[in-house]
Image (cartoon, rainbow, N blue to C red; front, side):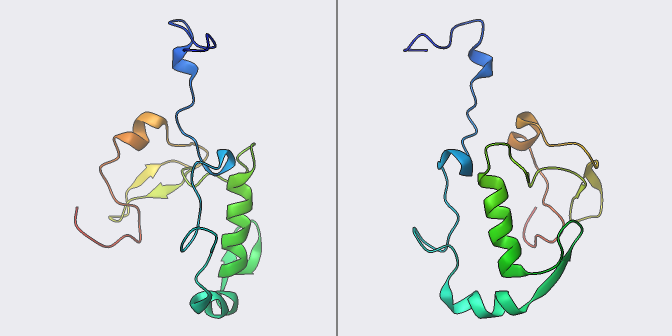
Length: 117
């Protein structure tokens, strides 16, 4: 707004959701360390079956997701459906992505999350 790029007519177009691609956030055990070396071997040995990538180590899948979420075209978005809550209820249908409003008002835990509420 200060620079004149945004005004009362287009201020709603401002992207406040800076992510990996903008380098606003960083994945890692600590700055400069993507994965704690204590867990690297175990993560490289453990295999999972990804619907797109097939059998892949957890380590390689994490690195692939990091690469995909860092891509400006957002090849992978963790908020795409299908997403279920921990009670098994479908919250985000397949093919849909959670909106900013849905993310900021989310009052449920994703399947696999243990804890209160």
